[in-house]
Amino acid sequence: MSLSEDSRKALKTINALILDKRFSKADELLQPLVDLAIEEALLMKADLLLQQSPQIGLKYLFELCKGNIAGANFKAAFILYFHPEVGVDFRPYLFSAFKQGDHAAIIAAANLYLQQGVVAKASQILTKNRHISEVNQLTESLGLISDNEEALLDFNDIRRADLSKLTYESVAPEINLFYVDDFLTDFECLWLKNCALCELKRSMVVDGESGSNIVSNVRTGSVAQLAPIANDWVLLNIEMKIAAYFNIPIENGELSNVLKYEVGEEYKPHYDFFTQTIKAANKL
Image (cartoon, rainbow, N blue to C red; front, side, top):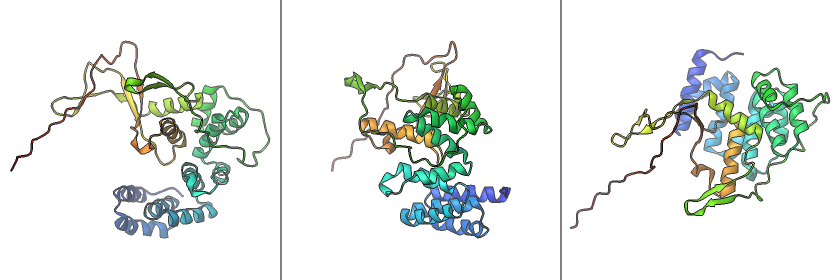
């Protein structure tokens, strides 16, 4: 059943309330949609409960998975993969989402197999789902082809990336500049590029006096800022690798940016700095 415009607007409002941690008001507006068994509302109910109590939220989400609610299995797999401390295997949920034809699950599974070097399985997954436009684009760009007609029985051979043996080369220790070889797979590079194409905007600079972003001939390229969202497994996995490499909490990192420069565009030499005004306290 397609979502009505009124329901769509209501869910957008509720999501904003959840982000603002106004949980009581969000629950009040959400419950009528939950009573109608609108799948998007059921998933948002899981989000609301997870914010208030992860244990209760996961229990509710697992119930949605049992009821084959669209998107529930992928959401469960996503949470369990990025929070291994929960102690529940993410793979059965990812496979269930894959069998349901969840586009995000197809992308995530292919990426995980490529990450561990199992190209044949990744090619099989992508080739069999070429009817999905974004999957077809990735398959063609990567040149992946598979004639394996066997049905995939499970994802039990998917492994989390081993982030305990990561290495990097120090280029300029005085400024903490490091070089990492083969940090991203071809799939991840292509995914970032495709995501960025939809978000590219003229690069701007910060005006020294007003503090506002302004267009400047100093910087003439384009930039796309990519924020990990609730279903972008690939991007969040990249962010997790960055955090693991340098032992920095993922929440301490900046949002990822993709820069694009056409011929003749540039970012002229410049200094990056912040000014801080310190007011002396009156002595008594």
